[in-house]
Length: 258
Length: 242
Image 1: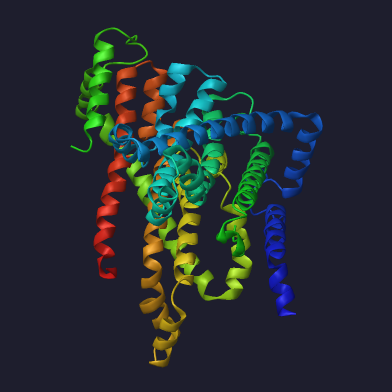
Image 2: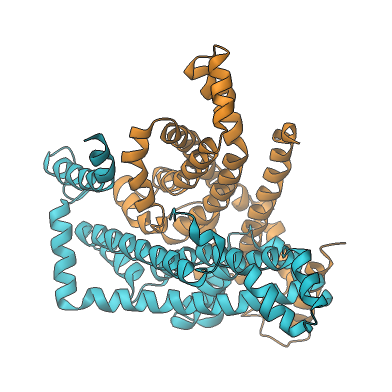
């Protein structure tokens, strides 16, 4: 019995959260403006989905954040490889990356708006600017940390530098690079939403900020639920991709935690 | 010497503006930005807004660290807490916390309260997860030894579990520190009447670009130095591990 309860615990606690929301909102302790009932919020999401507004906003946000994420992956992995393979690149980029990593890049949003305007280009650039850092640092750490013995053996067996990179360094570095990507993906979504909130327009962030300006609190809470679900889905997909890509790696044998 | 490339970038910036390669409306020269920084500091705008930001960030982060660490260690210590709170943490962890900006404003208005709440909510989960993982990685043998030597459960928690959770916890707090800056600046950019993020947006909308660049750089370097200081301080704290 206890085991059954433990297994059902995730669902119980999610349902309890939902029930607590609904009951607390109905209790009259807070005004519907402060916390609309969950049922009202879900109805609102349903209505938005039926009218197509939800899909338009969700599609736009996903398009911007995923395109930005993909660009950061390509850019970040190549820069990371460059830093570990090339001395000039290391001299130039290492300090920039280590100084840029802890900086709150989002502060540059108004500058990027000034340069690139209010449209997709500036939002996607902002996403890239922010999401590229975890990818670069993970790639540097991963490619720099490949076991010497692997490299020596491969060289001994006659691997050329290119082959060495493709056949040994890249696969050996992949788990840690994937971890960097798993950090970068939620950042891409967050930055995209903040940029949309600041600039307005189509997109989940823009829709939320419009709802907030019109004191439309079911709209605001609908946005939160939508964004939470989207974020959760993306993180799960990424974990799935990791399991697929690293099926050959010993880590795949361990039970997944994420 | 390590940061020579950054210095070169700064010189390059000054040079391309001085030689007129880009319009000053798009990129004010570094020297203009520095003198704007000086002016903002002298007139006090930087200090009043900086103090507002510091207060919000500090209060939110401190709350997040205290509540997050306690929650994480409780989750590692009692299975029942883990079974019921764990899934909520897992479900809410990937949620982009900046989505809460409009709600915290709805609840607490434009002032300090909404930012502190946002930073608290956003930074709590990384700390919780770090404390949880750290406390769970505590060697069972150590716990057993301490127990058999007669330590009470509470004593074990304080003297064994907490110290072994500390390295992970320190990392989690570092993540939270970086997040604090991000959430602070985003929320102040979007809705606020004071704070460094607000100042950036305000100057940008007014077209005072050299001052806007100045505040952006100040915020960026504050984030950088906070991280470096934190790392230096925690190396001291964790020195006993070596």
